[in-house]
Image 1 (cartoon, one colour):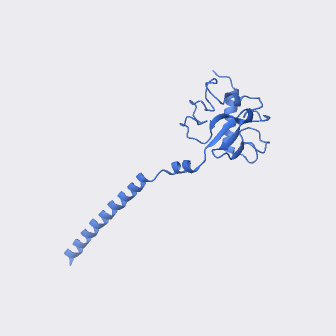
Image 2 (cartoon, rainbow, N blue to C red):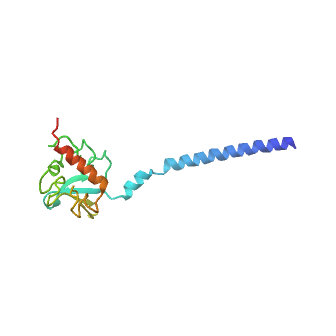
Length: 161
């Protein structure tokens, strides 16, 4: 009886080992084949585009694109980067001036840049005004984007070395 018990335990261990191996392989296969959650969110999230100037015809970049995307405002080396240190190469340079009708950095700007998704839905104005109802920094705005915009505007006012 002891020999049967030992044999049966040995078989159970081998079966459990096979089950563990199959479970591990299944999990690895699912991990490899399933897209990351971040990529899934990027697919379903509309691209937030910034437009400015007269009749908002000038494209200023993508607000929620990956920082390595050439159109991203987070890409400091691209033509749309908010903190692009090359004012002649940055399309955003004119719209980050401390004062001006179209400036995102002037809380009194009459026509600051707008945020649209790719289907044309309007998400408000890219402006540091906390009183303007349609401003990204206004009462119904996006605090994280507002803080980033304020930091960029403040850095832009400091003299470059």
